[in-house]
Length: 234
Image 1 (tube, rainbow, N blue to C red):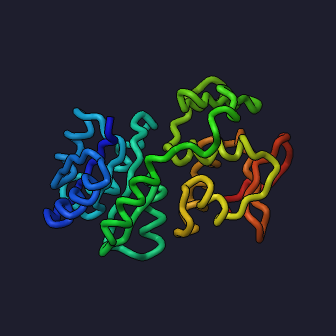
Image 2: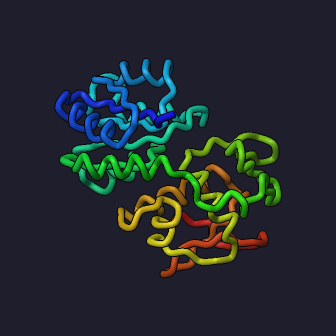
């Protein structure tokens, strides 16, 4: 079964060009001209990746992303399209729960590559990853992609889950943001703030049960043993 992608943008030209590129890659495509139509599609069809325009009418892409992430019940990967290139705007999108973003004008080919990257969610070989990982009160089911803390479910986006699983299977090893971008996101290049924001969100959602330590000037590591480490957002 082909992966199905939703393109939600109020620009018909953008929708048509992107649709043709994605269909050329063998993907199924659904389109929406505004946020309300996008919500209808998301509520009635299986969607594997949602590409949302930040500036479209109705619930805009940023608002729609926050709605999808509220409570963690809808885990479809989200790529935001934005005409705003400032770092604060990009970070706002990532903090809303987006897995990725592209700034307009963008290359349709690059978007197709980003969609493919988001669809690949296998940071480690299945044979090397336990079906369940428990660290203190934190439990991760790798098969169902379910995370609980003291028995309560924690809603993570797909990228946040991938990052957590990577850390748990590579404990006590420092990884730079460049290395994490390549090994978790499968990107050879990209905005390093993507990693920074996802680490911050992961720390926030896991609270005192995270073991992500900042190694200043080098990157991040997950401590294999609980201890008094840095819990900052850097």
